[in-house]
Length: 162
Image (cartoon, helix red, strand yellow):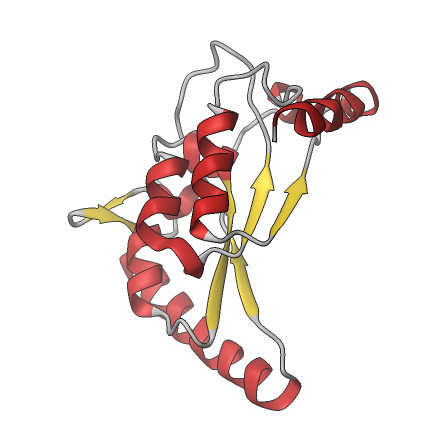
């Protein structure tokens, strides 16, 4: 069981609201949360990610959706973009090898990162939903030991299909 539960999410939301307000008012900056899988555990009728979005102020807190870390525990990145739109101005672009079970755990092996378009995620649908939602910045990440070969292939995929 993850140590990140509703109580921790409640505390985290309060901290993010406070930091976000300070960053906005004093420095003209935006606080952005980058998710990992722990936010997508079930909570009530949704997930802790839904809870965090409900508990944070849009003017003070934005979100960067890491599509891999949303997908692995069972969330649908397309549905997230459709539901939250402008709250998510940034996207972490990744893909995961075919056949890897969708589960949340802290033992993810980054060698499961694969070239975009060759893995499990429906990149076309995700990019379409992200663009419709107004995502402004996309960050390609490949933490595998094959990144020197895979990143150029992923860039070629992005240039061809996005």
